[in-house]
Amino acid sequence: MYKFVIKGGKPLKGKVRVSGSKNASLPIIFAAILTEDAVISNVPDLRDTRTAISLLTDMGFEAEFEGNRLKVAKGTNIKTEADYELVRTMRASVLTLGPLLARFGKARVSLPGGCAIGARPVDLHLKALSKLGADIRIEHGYINAVAPGGLKGAEVVFDFPTVGGTENLLMAAVLAKGKTVIRNAAKEPEIVDLACALRKAGAVIEGEGTDTIEVEGVESIGTIDYTVMPDRIEAGTFVACVAAAGGELVIEEFPYDVLGAVIDKFKDAGVTIEKVDEMTVFVKSNGRLVGTDITTEVYPGFPTDMQAQFMAAMCLADGVSIIKETIFENRFQHVLELQRLGADIKIEGNTAVVRGVEKLIGAKVMATDLRASASLVVAGLAAENTTEIYRIYHLERGYENLEKKLSALGADIERVKSDRPY
Ligand code: EPZ
Image (cartoon, rainbow, N blue to C red; front, side):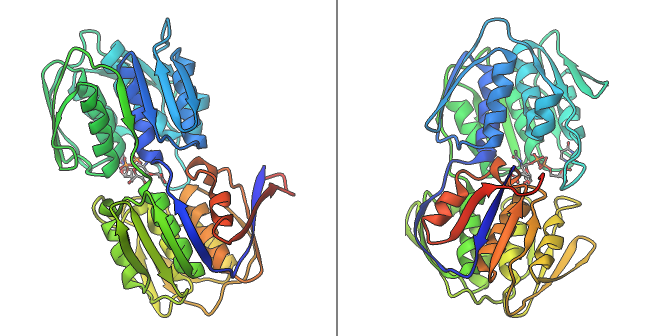
């Protein structure tokens, strides 16, 4: 087990490059199941992407992951299963369901359990795939799905614009017979990236990024050869780091056009964010911010994956910030840990009221989930003295070499073996 040790209070300075998007890579990696082979570039080297690759190799695919480039080739007898041990570590494994059903007409995928931020059921995924003719049963904690005659295109209306549900259905529809119309589809940029990757391989898709996606099923698709978009949440996390710790950064591979809500809110809070060119921004902050309210929404609203990091930056802002979480029912795990650093936060239902304090004081804190751990890094960089963040395996699911990137920007942060059994 490892922990981060951060000696806070140092402003950040320098240039950093955003890695490829975790949440775009995962569905595109699983889309490789739909075809004979895939070459996917700019895949971040993370616990989650390595879990996704293990799932493919466990099924019998050949995979080679070197220097952020993933090559996938179809192996011999493919096992159309995603087993409990791997699904347990990463809920996004449920995204194997659609591609397996579409390509092989059957799938046995462990039901993802709950997770720290909420129950996160997959009922909408299953309902949608059933509409395409899949017969789906839950037995002994597994999703058993068959579509003996192949999937047939249909019109599906999601009760909620689920990101994963849209991705699962989109991948299934690519090889279904006939036309599928997905209504109330999620509009997240990662879905647009997946659709672009599939279209490049020969899928017939229209409307991605809007709430209605139309797919004309095809017999098969060719090689997926695609470069994944930059990670908008990692990009936003760097803005939160410099907002809280102060300093100035040049951030490269910054997907400016898909971060509108985040940029606006940090500007409202007093952070300078200027576009240098299409994919580069200059960010400056004197570390003293103005309390700013946010409500998390589906895209293009303020992303729930940036809520914890924004909250950490607001702990030191002048005034009050009202932070409302509308996507997940339990995404305030970081509050208790931020309070250990001296933050003044009160939770009322799905709303956190953050009153800015003069300073945060370093302490031992515990990461509980991916973005909660990122918020503790943000706070630790701004806090006085030393902050030790335990269980950083949560963080390493979604951030590539974060401590190295921050050290190169002047932060005093080290990844060391934990002195505790966690
Ligand atoms: C994706 O999760 C992301 N993960 C999450 O990022 C992100 O927070 C989330 O979208 C929302 O933007 C990946 O892309 C791998 P949802 P997903 O289906 O697909 C409910 C991170 O930090 N729901 O849009 O699971 C669900 O419980 C991760 O990188 C159902 O009720 O999100 C939740 O309340 C965390 N039934 C809401 O919808 C379903 O069948 C949003 O879920 C599906 C979802």
